[in-house]
Length: 156
Image: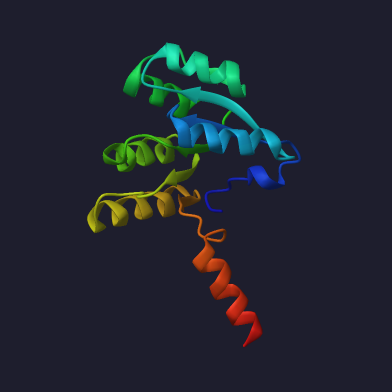
């Protein structure tokens, strides 16, 4: 980590997640957060205050009170959020990543993180400049093909 920042993973308190988006994949991810020791859902932002409130009732966390882009900015500025999970429409990912990085947040973004190489280079440069972690949420470890490849690799 750069710029004198401390890691939320070594702070001695739970990692506080903010969720951008209230759809199915955000719900699946949030269920994993609340089931994981050392992590908590701090805030959620949706396209409408009602969707954020519904999500909050089901998974916890404070719902934002603004709508749409303003709700996402409210969450990005939240002092009680360490890491933002972006599970919104793919066309918005790069803009939302930049918003969160500029607010000093680490980011885990659903795939695809960006729509093209230029956007990817831009968000990676922003993460490096901010000294923040930026990760694309592309998990393959449980895919049958990945499991088989791992087994074959171990067996030689």
